[in-house]
Image 1 (spheres, rainbow, N blue to C red):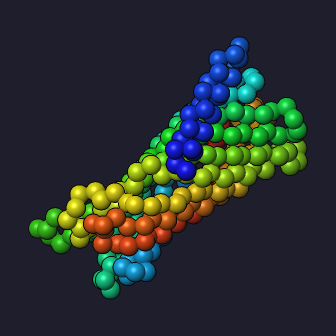
Image 2 (tube, rainbow, N blue to C red; image 1 turned 180 degrees about the vertical axis):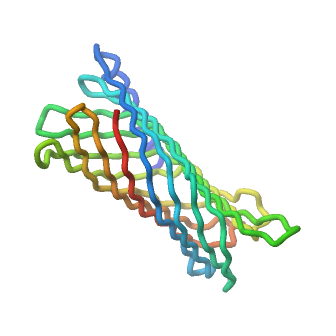
Length: 249
């Protein structure tokens, strides 16, 4: 199944590149945004629970042709965050950091109805780190979660009223590698055995008189992980609820 999806992604990339090469004109868009993320993770078998708040700074760089193809580079990193985690009945406050990066290449249909329709694939990476607030003289303990994935996404934008558009979308994430290292674990980065990940979102874009676009997005992400042999936290379930406000130039 994974080989079939990878072959589909490769074919899709080649088709998008071919379509992009035929275009005479293209447009460049920059979309900085501020985001809030509520993060939670639980693993009932290991009695582990994590809850936190993250404040993100994100930026998207898009190249869209006058016909079909487009490329998008997305980067994000938090500028503030805090969390509490509980493991084996012990609860502690932690500092939390999150970073993400993805490259999408896809096709877009702008002519069949009032709005647009897009499909994409590419490559993505997400990392989360929790650092415990250690006592004086002790080294802080660190929990890390890293995921590398191939996305398969779809988005639909429909005209709502005046200069506003409803936006809905979803993305299945084929996880190629996943590492989870908990603070009591001796192994450096145990690779996970089986993972399921996806994202879904809804939002609205408003086009201003100077052709800027004000964007809002509310999204839900989920990462379900079966443990590796060396992992102390079995079958974890990571959920993120995100809200973003941005401006497209």
